Length: 522
Image 1 (cartoon, rainbow, N blue to C red):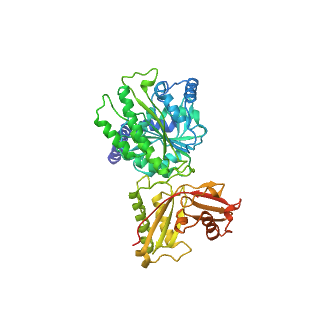
Image 2: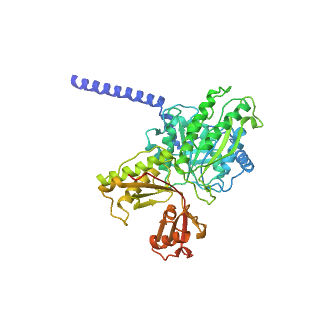
Image 3: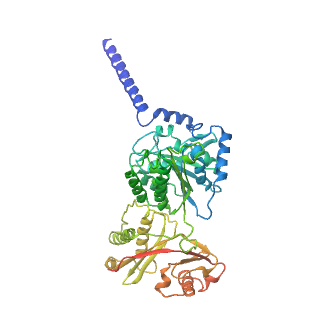
């Protein structure tokens, strides 16, 4: 009997201890960075309720729709700028920044996107990393907007710096205030809300690369929600904001960082920040470089002092900026101009050489990792290998490429060395005598008249049925060919068609430009 009592006492003690641990665990979960109470509610309701309605914008659906349509009616849409890839847009109360924001959203009319990725810096929380809302809905007075859970979870899986921090989204207005504008300008889209935690300054690069990689196959728009200077006098805001905008328009993050550093040294009275969404802005700039959206336009600048209800003593600056894929190069022929600077050229040439030497010697493709946004662009490239000045292999792919530029160069260099069926595979004995030439390509553009081709400037691809052939721009100059000779050899030797196939209306002709650079023969 005593033994039974002892066993009962032990079991009761175990239950009590487990209960204590359970309570402690629940308390920790309710106070740690995971925001478990909010997460529990979110999972149950599956909806993030509006937190800024009635404060930053009207809570009444009719009033809200009417106000947004009025803003859009007064905004202008740019013509012939190319496909839009990203925007920077303010997020203050509509009475202050709504008209400015309308200039950015006006560019989206008649466009179609699968997903809008909306980024901002958290105004209420500080945490290490980036929070992505993973599933469910964001709600506004105009209805619910679904989360692209597939893309959101892909971003989270891409880096341990990206995760879900529920509390960060609870009261944040910077994402929410953009949604009614999107609801009035677009149809059938989803969103991915993303908030920077204001701790690690390089998270923007991680996010930009993750978006470019994870959104492959989707038509996405990336939105940076940010105001500019906070609380200087009207004239000081105009000065500071113009400097920041100029740096953004340069497309160079280094210029933006330098500009802000120099402005900070000026000790402008009452300045709190020059851009509250600085990480979101940098992420958009980095993303634009990766995807080749280098046509950057200022759509509208204003500050709260320009509003009928705003004071000019302490103002907040607003800038709407759009990033377009370039439609026109300096020649006005509808082709993007590709520019890779000297240091990046050297890096790509080294990747080509190391790739070939590694594969020929060991049969293994070397692995490379590049964070440079320029080298992560999805640009097409051809790698040409020569030995003693003579062609030894040449293979490439066109834009948009299936992988970042640095990976394409590595793959095409190996292919040129061992897969060009015009030549035997490169042997290890030949390696010291090889030189490398890289041609980074613009996207193809179809033309209707072969006389539009400029010798030495345009590369050409011709297609008829299953047959096609490509000549790089430098082929004409290297072989001293006229336009007709260039096209005849392309038709006959590369496509296996009659020499004058370029004159046949059934032959499709595409042109492209290339930036060509090489190393010296050793």
